Image 1 (cartoon, one colour):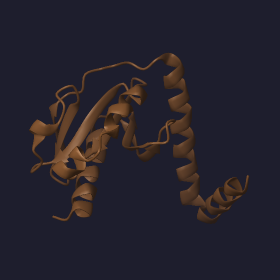
Image 2 (cartoon, helix red, strand yellow):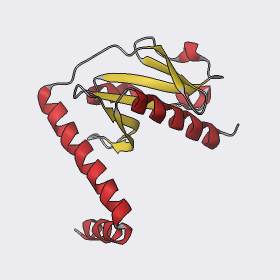
Image 3 (tube, helix red, strand yellow):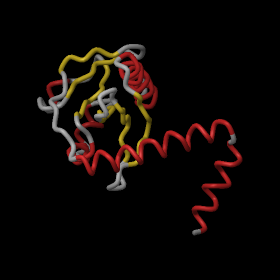
Image 4 (cartoon, helix red, strand yellow):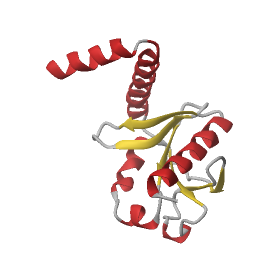
Length: 153
């Protein structure tokens, strides 16, 4: 399977995993440091789980930015497909193995709780992004106008 299709399949499985756990996931969540989380999910307890999707070993080996993600979540997971060499992934992260429809947690992520001030700031960012995306579904041209106006400022 080509990398973009594999990435889509793993992402879909990870989204379903989140929803099955009662988590509220957002795709491509911008983080305060300018990076983007593949999946950023608000858990029912108010914590945040970040899921980094990896399509192949080369994708993992060429991308070390995931280490910076710990500062923005209570738990960090990797989501990979069944052919991924999981021995490459760090032991101190969660591991989701995906088949394109479902994901199984082979390893739970250890908790590393966020500071209250950072959690509050991330919650505001998360809620604003989710609301803006919903508004964009209801009024795509209004969202485009807002984005254009923000670029001018």
